[in-house]
Length: 319
Image (cartoon, rainbow, N blue to C red; front, side, top):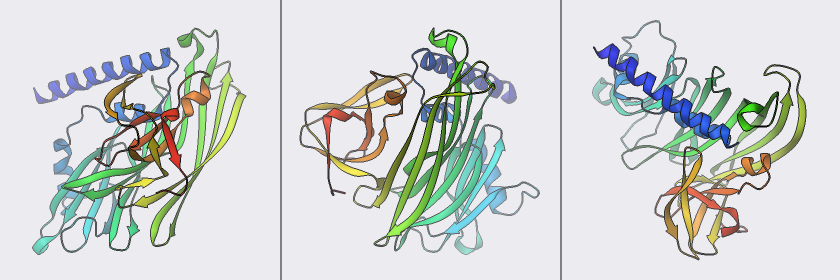
C-alpha cells in the first residue's frame, strides 16, 4: 500500500509540474529556478533520513556519496556533511555532529542530484556548505541545468544564502508560443570564481547567454542574440546573505513572490526602506521585449522576494 501511495503522489506531482510548465512556456516565461523548485516539490525529507544515517554510521556500504567536514553548526567541534544522489531526480544532504562517538543528524535537506559538496569559509569563525546540483529534465520539460547553492547555519538549521545557475540549456517548440515551426532555446554558460577580500567570501560570475533557434530540437542552431553579464556577490553578515548591493525603495511598492508563471504580491514595502540586492532577475526581459525586469531582494526582516527595478534605487558603495 505504501508503494502504491508513493507512486500515486509521484504521478500527481508530475502532472502538476507538467501543467505549470505548460503555462509558463505558453506565456513565454522561462525560469530555470522555477524548474528547480518544481523538481523538488512535494518531497518528504523524512524518507531519506535513514539513508543518510546509515551512511554517516558507515553501515551503508557500496553507495557512492559525497562527504565534507567543517564547523558549520553552533555546537562544539566539526560536523560531517554527507550528500547522496538517490535517483535521477533526487538528492539528499545531511549534517551530523559526533558527540561521544554517536552520529547525530542536525539537518536534512532535499536537493537535486548532487555533483559537489564542500565547506567554504564565509569569514573567520563562520563557514557554509556549498553544493552543486544537476537538473536533468530533457524528457518533457527540456531543461538540463546545474546550480550552485550556498547554505549557512542560521537559527535552528541551514538557510540558503546564495544560489546561481552554473550552466543551463533549455529549449521549447515555437508552436507552444504560436510562433510557427521550429525550436528556440537559451544556452547559458557561467564561470564562477570564489575569492576573499578583507576576510570575507567574494563570488564573481561571468555568464554568457545566447538565445538561439533551430529547425529541430537537436538540429543546427542559429544565434538570435547574445550577451555577457558579470556579477559580484559578497558575504554580508548583517544581511545573512551573499549580497550584490544595497538598494532603497523609492515609492510604496509590493514585494512579490513567483508562483507558477505569475508574480504575486507578498506585502508592501514603504518608500525609503533599504533592502539587500541578491540577484539581477532580468533574463526574461532580455529574451522578450516589454517584459518587466526585477531585483531579487531580502528585507531587514528576512523576507526574500522580487521588486520591480524602477522602484528601487541601488546605492553606490552601500553594502
